[in-house]
Image (cartoon, rainbow, N blue to C red):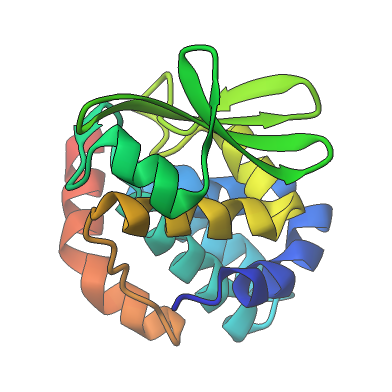
Amino acid sequence: MIAAANMIQRIQDVYRTEPELTRTITCATSIVEVNLALDILRDHVPQRTLAAALSLRAILTSIPCFPCTMCVDEEALARIAHLEKDRLAWKKSLAPDCDLIVMMAGNFCFDVIIQADETSLFITPTSADTDLIDPAAVDVFLGRPQVLEAVIDLLRDMGIPFNPKMYLSLEDWALDYAQQGLEDIRSLF
């Protein structure tokens, strides 16, 4: 079990003071941008907090892009995940003002939507060339850790493999992404 709530709790202080840099670390497609954000924060944010932000990034990048195929059908998922039918969708209330909505048919999931504060947010980004995940969804995850945990539980209930790599240090991140970072820099010139 991934302790997403613990990770988010560690990140929340830096998110409150540096929301743009935190969003860059968690959802930018460019490794160069992520490394620049890390370098800016490195002097005044504990390394464990930055490693937690990178681990959160790994969790978010492990969420599949929708639509996708599930290993169960909609009836089984509704029963396993305790979803209730709501018109053409299935819904699970997470809090008085927050719901998780699943659009599916058979064993095909069209989308997972977070409805928070009367706003509907799609997890899959509208601009996949700049963001791995919708930054507004990241804001909800960082403000309400139970939402991310509910999404992770839902993915597991769908039978979708979900094994993100956790980072214990910035050096672990640097070793994993050194080659891709160099390729991103080369593409700029």
